[in-house]
Amino acid sequence: MSKMFEYPYKIELISMEYSIILFLIGATSLISVFIGALGISGFDWALVAAIEDGPVENLSAIGYVLSALACIYALTAKQSLLNNKLALLWIPICIVFLGEEISWGQRIFDFSVPAVEQHNVQEEFNFHNLAIFQGGGLTKASDLKSMLRAVMDIQFLFQGGFVFYFLVAPQLIRINLFRSVATVFGYKSPSPRLQIVTLALLLLSYLLVAYTADESYKDRIVEVRELVISAVILAYLAGFALLSKTELPPEIRTLT
Image (cartoon, rainbow, N blue to C red; front, side, top):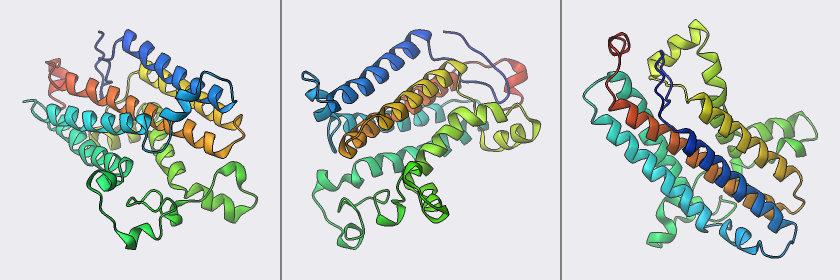
């Protein structure tokens, strides 16, 4: 595994083999659901796996659990307040993502919160499915008002935040101003390798959604995309946790 240090140093502990495996599994899963959506026999398993509360969604939840544990592991490192900043930022994020993914354990513990469920498009106890956050896609926007609603859609905000963190911010930190802001939050850039895999899988998922006619099948491709996002976050934070246990060069250690 290669190690690349710069400030904010890149997380470069994810091996080439893992990157290839992540891409192959992600691409195969997305394409399998797409083929199943076309009605081709032999791919029904992919559609079943991607249903609401199915295996794909459960794996996404497990990814967030492991990501939070990776951050907790990083907190045990003796060095670096900078490490603590990033870990402390991601732990609550992973908890929120996990909670929303499993509706805060509603089906596990069999409880009901009518005050929330009556405003939820899926009648669940979570907030990302509240009617107020359902703005529809940009492709369906016909005027400025509907476009603004689409931009406020929770899926748009979630994916937009993910894209900014993993694909846009690594380019912005080349600028001194943004590098200073990144330092305040303890931001560490994902490795170029992980950025490429992330971009490729996201573009593939958007392309497959665009060529899928049935809305319910589109939702299943989106479920797989969310699993890809969970896996990328896990790869990023696992690399960060390993890096936090690595003895850094003196010039980096003084900055942290």
